[in-house]
Length: 475
Image 1 (tube, rainbow, N blue to C red):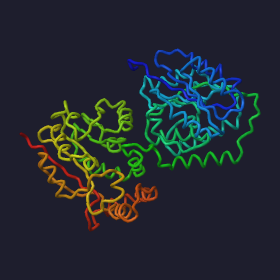
Image 2 (image 1 turned 30 degrees about the vertical axis):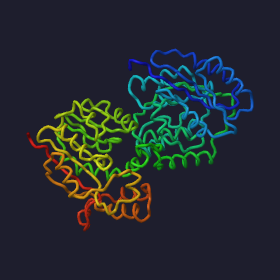
Image 3 (image 1 turned 90 degrees about the vertical axis):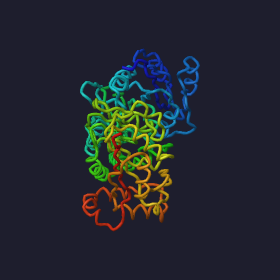
Image 4 (image 1 turned 135 degrees about the horizontal axis):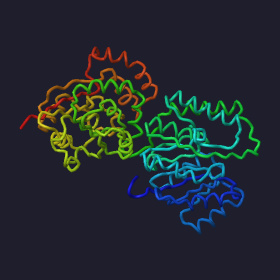
C-alpha cells in the first residue's frame, strides 16, 4: 500500500433524482477509509426538470467536495460521463450510479485492487461469486450475461460483467481513452478499450439491489441487436488513445498487426543478450517478446506508456521501468556499463540529436556489448506519414553507419527489413497524403503476413527499415 493515500474522484450522472440524491451523496461523502481520500464528487445533472439542480447547489455549499455540472438538454450517458471525466483531478476515478441499487460502501472493495495490487482498473461485478443481489429481472440479467459471454469470446478474456456501470480506473489512464459512445454502451466501450490496451483489469464483487417493484420490460430484438452491434463496433475500433503530444493515437494503430510485430521481434531477438536496455518501449509490443532476461530495463518518455509498462512489469522481478529521454545524458546517470544490449526501435529518427543519443547508449553498454538500432529507410519516400509521426529523417545505410561509427561503435552489420511495405508507405505518404494507417491495410497486412515473410527478400528494393548492429569495443 502506498505511504500516501491516493486521492479519488467519484463521478455520477443523475436525472430527476431529487427524491434520493441527498442521502446517496451524504453516504459517499461520509465514507471513511484510510487507504484513500475522496477529494471530489462530480455530479452531472442531465437536464433534470425537478429540483435536483437546486438541491445540488445547496449541498455544494455545505461540502466543497461536491461539484455539480448541469446540461442544458438531455444527453446520453456517454456524453454526460465525458464531461465529468474532463473535470476529474484525483489519482483514481470511480464511476458510481447515484441510485440505491448500488451501495456506496462498496467503493472500498472496488478501490482495494488499485491501491494494494496495482491494478489499472477494477470493474464492479454484479455476477461474480461473492456478490449478492436482490431478485432481479431474469431477462435483463440474461441480456447482460449473454453480452458478456460474446465479449469474452471475441477478446479471449474471462470477465463476468462487461457492461457494469460501477468501476474504478486510474485517472490518467481514463482521460487518455477517447470515448465514442453517446449512450449507455459507454460502459462496454471502456471495458473493451481497457482490454485492447492490455491494462491490468480486475473484477470485484459488488452488491446489486434492483428496484424489484418496477415492471421492467424484457429486452426486445432491438435491444439485442443494439448490444451486438455496439460490441462489434467497439471491438473493431482503433481509437484507443486520445490525441496527445506523443502521437499515441497513431502509433497504437500498429497494435492491429500483431503478426507484423512478431516478425520484427523474431528478426531482432537473436541479437539480444541477457542484460537489456530498451529505449522507447511503448506499450511493450516488443518487450513482451524479449522477456524474460536476467535484467530488462523498459523505458519511454510517454507517461501513458510508462504507466502501462509499470503494470506490465508486475510479477516480473527482472524488469525495471524508467523514464529515459534518449538524447539527454542525465537520464543515463547510474546506468554506465550496466547492459550487454541496448535496443532502440523507431526512436532514433525522432530525437533531435541522433549522435548524442547513440553516445548515451554507448555509455550504458559493457565492453563488447551491442546496440541494436532500427530506423526508417529511403529518404525519397518521406511523406505525410513521416510528418505526422514527427520523423526527423529517413536514413540511408551510409547515414546510419556514419552516425553509429561517430558514436564509437564498430558496426558489425546493417541489413534491411520489411521490403513488402515500401510501396504502401510511398502510396499513402507521398501520393495520397494520408496522415494515419488504414485499418483495412493493417488487416490485409495481418492476414497475409505469413506469405509476406516468405517472399519479402525477393522484392528488388531495400526495406522500409534498416537494422544496424554496433559493438562497443573493449577499451
